[in-house]
Length: 165
Image 1: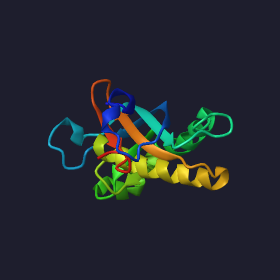
Image 2: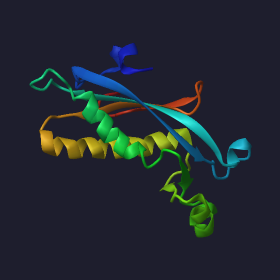
Image 3: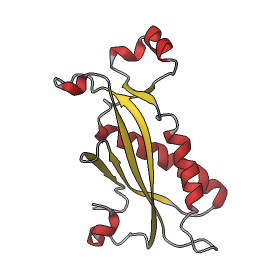
Image 4: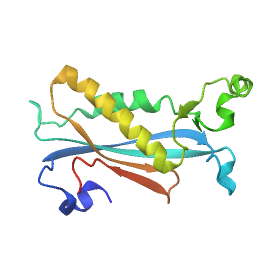
């Protein structure tokens, strides 16, 4: 459910303005400890929906320029694109010879790389990117919502607890 589909879930601290932009990237992973087919390395075409909000609009009437949001998020997801996402407790994370053959250092995260955990990692990284941008612009912008599709039919959602009960 996106923020626009159910406005009644907002609290009294709800923002009045938000925008959403879609991103896509390709990445591989395996779910360490899984007993089914996801225990093996495999890849996905991830689709990421990013909604940001602000209590007001800037002088041009925008929450944030879509191009600037693209720059912030692209900088983050470029690390993931055409790469492997690996749990730091997975023994493969420490196999230097394997990664030399891969010719690209994997993205190593502290959570098993399920779509539910990848979206949490992305939320933190995007919030940090937005905070860095706010230092320059002075505009109050918050990450409101993320949706990460792993397949066309399977996705995880993250809602900023600042705005949702």
